[in-house]
Length: 248
Ligand code: NAP
Image 1 (cartoon, rainbow, N blue to C red):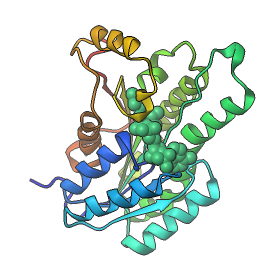
Image 2: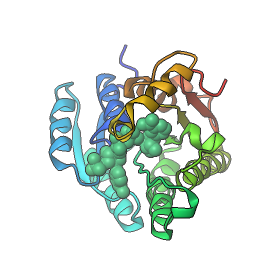
Image 3: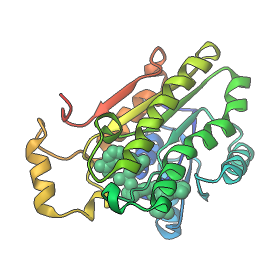
């Protein structure tokens, strides 16, 4: 069964990692996919081709999610190119880790702007369309770190916790118009973002997870498929933990 047949989705930050996993699963389930990247043009165009292989419409857009103007322009362009949008996945995110003592103001501001301000930008830009059609599903990619905090990630944790507050507020504000807004809190998902980490540390994390492994982009994508689709028609304002039991 193709769960997203006839739906159109925008996914931010899908040139690699979790976003790419979501784009592939959505296309495999029949959705037309518009997705963004920040600088990885080659991989983005390759992904566009891969998605088209599923027989859906797919297009890559270079757009900085942290920019209010670019988010607005992106949504207008996607509406013109795709003729509508049903699903918004706010996935774009960065880390600039450091102990607070060494964290610069620029590193704090940039992480907040790319991770948190971006979801304001994108939600504002899509809001009118969702209100008019009286439906829409928004999925925001938070993190286990936004729920429990993490030493060396004060900026990232603040941005991811902020996303949860934003998600619940939007769910309360727009629920009466059949617009749903949920968050996913992935635990340790093995992507390029985590490839930079020391292997010994990473193995320690795997051992501490009840399911004894890091997650895959597909693990997160399947949870996202549920929240984006009508399968979750009565679910809003929730944070779905996809962490192998890490917080249990
Ligand atoms: P990743 O491999 O580093 O990929 C990040 C994606 O975001 C890339 O496509 C990147 O585009 C894009 N991006 C970065 N800045 C952007 C901007 N300003 N505007 C638009 N796109 C931008 O990261 P990931 O591990 O897949 O993580 C995806 C999301 O899941 C993030 O929000 C992250 O915080 C969250 N998360 C990840 C984990 C994990 O363990 N990996 C755990 C919890 C939550 P370019 O390729 O062009 O740079």
